[in-house]
Image 1 (cartoon, rainbow, N blue to C red):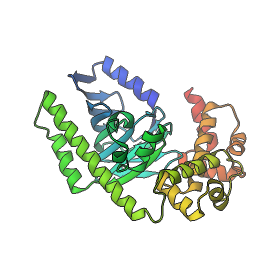
Image 2 (cartoon, one colour; image 1 turned 180 degrees about the vertical axis):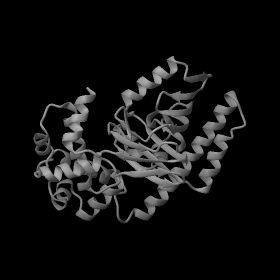
Image 3 (cartoon, rainbow, N blue to C red; image 1 turned 30 degrees about the horizontal axis):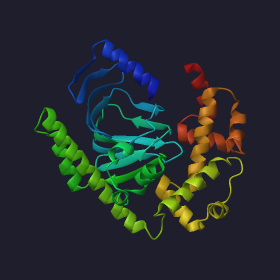
Amino acid sequence: MTKLLTDSNWQELWAESEQNGNIYRQSNSFESIYQGKILDVCNIYTCWAELRSGLSILTNELEFIDDLGWIRDGLDNSQFGLSFFLSGKVRIERHGLTDEADEAVGKYYSECNCDLKETEWWKAGEKYSRIYLKIEPQQFFQSFSEEDLEQIPIYLRQALIGGKVQPYYYQGKITRQMQRVLRQILQCPHQGLMKQMYLESKAVELITLHFQQFQDQDIRDRSLTANNLSDVEKIYQAKEILLSNLENPPSLIELARQVGLNDFKLKCGFRQVFGTSAFKYLHDYRLEQARQLLVSGEMKVEEVAFRVGFDSRSYFALAFRKKFGLNPKQYYQHCQKSL
């Protein structure tokens, strides 16, 4: 049976595990290591190191006791991340942003979740490990000139120029060069300041390799998709129009007209920026809004369906069950019991 966990549950269990001595912590001037067991959830090893302003690295190893569904609703809204998978596989859905995606060995992803919620599915007994880089753009790139910033991925550039962080997801393949750097991080031969400097150089090398891979992909897609800030802003504008018209959204052609793009460029650009089609994004957003309304308990199930733009209650129930594993009524009852 799959166990359900929220961020609040995780924080409570972590605090209890530390208090009971099930998690051991070791810290120095720039890194903290946690090792032990989260009660009834998983075995864990975590090493978190602050490398420089705006850049941190996390080495993480987990092995879950039961199959687990983890609802993440406490995500940091000011960071970007690069996550490199070394072992194991987790299935993740970023509600309103991407479809379900397997994140596994040989893959890495860059992301900015902002205020989006995630649901993660973990398998019991499977050893999972990754190296994660946390990047805070305003700090990390503060010494870069405008000319320099033209060479970094557009999703980061927009955050730096406009100061507005937008949700984003990109999945890539771990190359041989990346594999070499990841091994060097795990086998770091230094301690203290030398270790901090060594890990910083390797983290920057991974970021550079990611930018190069992203840049190569952008060149291949340039003739089909948005490639400048003006177009990206129009795509975000299109998203806002969709989300403000849940009950009666415009057609793709009408939406393109409203933001000043042709429908083909909007279609391709929307998929590049958000990882899915415009109306799949709208569909997932409707379901996520429905889920939040059911959690609040302030509306009946049929009222929720119409509030988020579903004319058919049966279709709403089918779509909700496919996305969340329970029909709306069952989900509502589960949430009320948890209160």
